[in-house]
Amino acid sequence: MTQKGTVQADLYSLHGCVAELGTKFARMRGKPSAIFMSTGTLANHLAIRTLAGKNSRVIVQNESHVYCDTGDSSQTLSQLNLIPLGANKATFTLKEVQEVLEKNAIWRVARKVGVISIESPVRQRRGELFDLQQMKKPASLPD
Image (tube, rainbow, N blue to C red; front, side, top):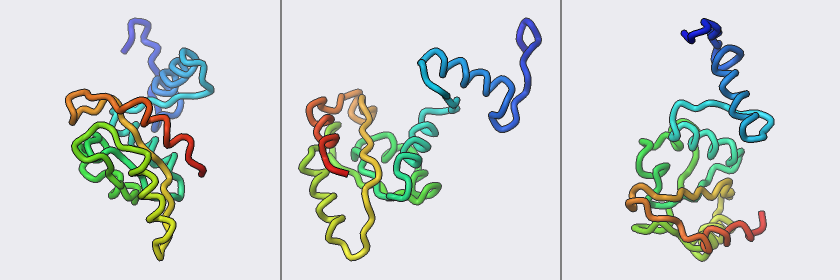
């Protein structure tokens, strides 16, 4: 209850106070819309799931929160195949990404990589940052 007593209940994030919160944040960020997520884990999962579309392979850091700390939720809830790269490091390389893409191209049953997920800082590596120059390189790859 607010001091004014004007909070309206929402129905599965439609209308009411949750929709109002999303609208307020969208305006603050200059975006057409926004959605409120109860946790960062949920936000990461839904972002990866949405971006992957029908391409179920997802490249992630071996030390990432998505790979280490979500109890296989991406695999279980969204049938995504997480491919971890860069063991014991915050950063993976373009060469590692290219190796995965080349293998995918020759496998008998083709499954495309739909997302390259990069978390920075990496909690499992005590806040180590993904190398910025390496981060930029996969963006130059053809679709």
